[in-house]
Length: 467
Image (cartoon, rainbow, N blue to C red; front, side, top):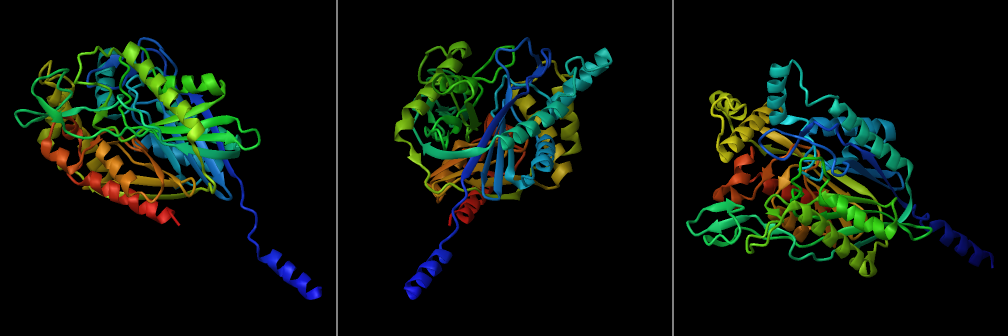
């Protein structure tokens, strides 16, 4: 008996300790600027006329044992590195979550404010010269934004609770379309117009996956928050007031089933070359009906997927983050001077669209060359949430082919790829698209091959996270 008892005790001593619970917390902070602030999304100055619906910074914080990660998605067109770094430092100081484990992203809504960057600086200077001050920037919005995003993380961290993690990948057909078309003359054109007889075919694919993660309170089973990603431009809304566009309507649809406290965090996927415009039909697509239609379609797809979702049986948090050099195009002093004249409308009152775009790209090139040198340092992050689920975050507006390549090569059963994370907004085309040209290529300050570097880096990090 003593011998048997010793064996039993030895066996008990060798058992692994009970695994800590997986916890998550969510919180939203209003980041809507004052009416009269500049609105984002175009190359001409536009002033907001009201608030169609409020803008939010939405935070998710994950914990498993001693490991924590935070993701914030803001209802903004973009968020620059200078701002995101400030948020990450402040949030890290207040919560203890490592800087490298924090992601700050934007949905890319064109209903958000213009609050930084080369266009904002040109418009600010022109308004100040005319009025003696910038009448369209009545507050220090950047300071407010930094504090709001950091506070969202702090509050989400404080609200963590044991949760279960369910995931699924419903297909959503007929919402997204590749906006680049190969024409009969061999040229590739963005948004060539509905029923254009010169269109041969779309120049690229569409990703109709809609990966969703649902977090339920572990004790009650009640849904409390979600993370979802779809590879389509959040640029449907076109009104004068501020608006979060269809992600706000996605949350509204989910709250109709799960209550007013439910937090839906939506990240724009790799949507650099996809949007909602169907050129194969002459069907009118006004934003007043399209934005609600898309939000409803996504919420319906999410809710219908819930019964068939998989439960992550071993949820746990691990993070990898690295900054990789991406070669930049060179610019000359003459190009920079001309670009400033173009965008300030001093050269000609109505420069062509691609002329303005090229000027915009040149001035961003100058900024990044000054900041990083010949190669900008782009951050790639990967967050493991379990044996089956991982999240990749990338800077800028990534072409859909890059996101599909990451998912195909990922060792995880489902991988959510979120763009516009931690750095400025410009396009990251494929090598093929660089050769084809058109609008997206015109905006990109990187040299061809930069996107493929980001893809390879993301896959390497995912491989490191998969045991």
